[in-house]
Length: 50
Image 1 (cartoon, rainbow, N blue to C red):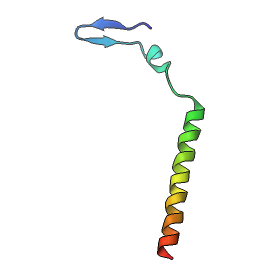
Image 2: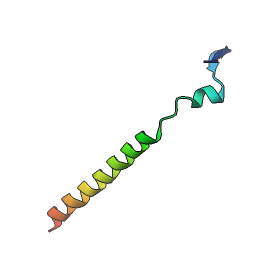
Image 3: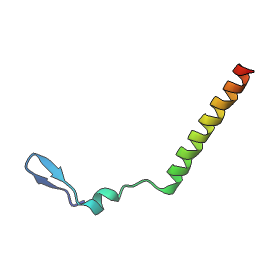
C-alpha cells in the first residue's frame, strides 16, 4: 500500500483505499437475507393476525 504518515494521521491514496471493496456476491447475500427477514415477518404477522 502507499500509505504515508502526515502529521498525526495516515493518508492512503483513493485507489488503494478502494481496492478492498466487497464483491457482487456479498451484495446478493445481503439482499437475500433482507428479503428472507421481510418474508418471515410477513408470515409471523399473518399467523398472529389471523
